[in-house]
Image 1 (cartoon, rainbow, N blue to C red):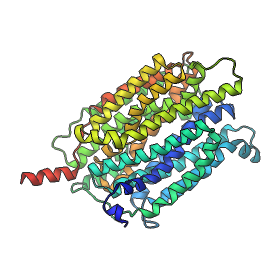
Image 2: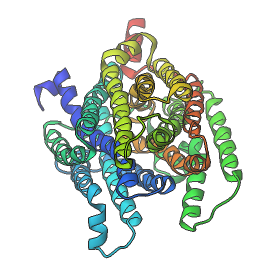
Image 3: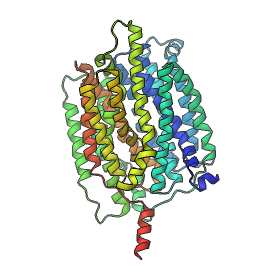
Image 4: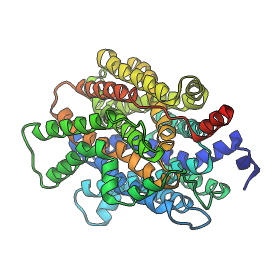
Length: 494
């Protein structure tokens, strides 16, 4: 074990963040370039772009849960997370290389349409990211103690990852997305392979004193379903939407969407109103885990809506110089989107370690996160009213970056202290369902509404409403003290 790991120095936190940074960079490329390249080079319509984006969440539903379970119980190449980080990194690099060459791959395989190949590439890319993303986040919990050190680990993860994410958007803005993609191939490969050999993983994962009940519950498929009950409405709608899309079946009403919405609200209220008084730590932790799922899921409906349909919003609503040729107009629209996400990620990179972590020490992780999500909801509302020029969009993106910084750092620290440490991979995978299932809702349900809407302001109306709901739900989540703090207080009491 390196001395920097023993001492938990800042340099170790930076090293620990690099595998997650590799996957974050791949995701940044996907966010920045996927919708752009599918629209401008391959001429897919809005609905088909949403379908391609839906491939990723599908990969995440199975990939992160399965990989999480497996990585909790294997030991290979002197690690339980290391093999999956390495495999995912290599696959992600290969799929990034394939992204600008979808037409070449399609023609070489004798396939006339490129939609199927685009979905296959996007699915494999997201599967690769999902194979690695869970282990890159779980390994932070594996090698850091609960409390301040773990919060610091996830804050550093986002700061380092976010800084490289900013680099991704700088490359796309200054040069172009093709340069970004090819640069990303080499960076993702390097950062996912080299750092993992310098991180010493514990052979045995820590278990809480009263985790026996939790371990029994996590071994049952029915109990796993029960643990994600706040997401059942999202799950039912995702299955319906995927089936309807494959069968080319369309309804001229929103009855299914309304039904799934009420199912979601019912199970979320059930989780929120359940008390934890008198329960063991493991059982109280599961209830707390459900509340986190409920709050986090609504965050991602809004954020994913922005990611997928930002280019469509810019196309329809943003005022650019008149007289540009079509190709130049598309290039400028792509640049606006790239710079927007650059600003979003710049704020997201700076805030976690420099601002949010110190605030969490004073007012707690949950309250800090809830305030940030509230700010993001206000930012989306502001986009509705003033987001018609590039400069106005850039300003609002800086505001949205506050919520983005919190979303990709604090929930991991909050969630990781509510579950069995020996099952971190499993629960990290289940936690990811609060991301991928809402992403499917954004790709299918929101996509259908946006494509039919004459006024594309609907995009940010949906974002504002879902983030406002999420903020309310986060204020209802309890901020647990870590075991180290509890033990310290107990010792002082004696």
